[in-house]
Image 1 (cartoon, helix red, strand yellow):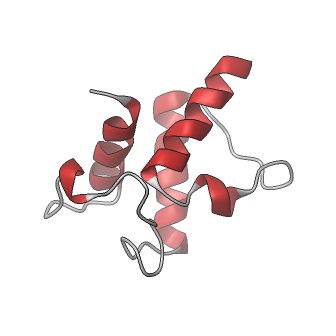
Image 2 (image 1 turned 45 degrees about the vertical axis):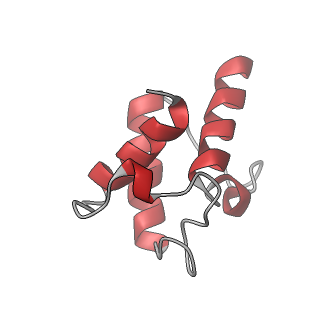
Image 3 (image 1 turned 90 degrees about the horizontal axis):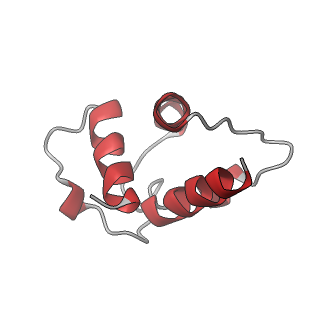
Length: 86
């Protein structure tokens, strides 16, 4: 399983979306508002799940969280980039 698919599965499990499959979430589709329809509470839960699974913390002062959490692909890109640095 590639990282984008892992992120999609994490979205589904951490946000309790049992009616979705990873293939239902497009790689570049927005996760919030007009896209998957997630809200700020979902963002918090998802960020905690990512922190737990990948050991990554989010700092709103140095990271554009709106860009990072835009899509499954943008999250995967951020995780890969952060892992390269760390």
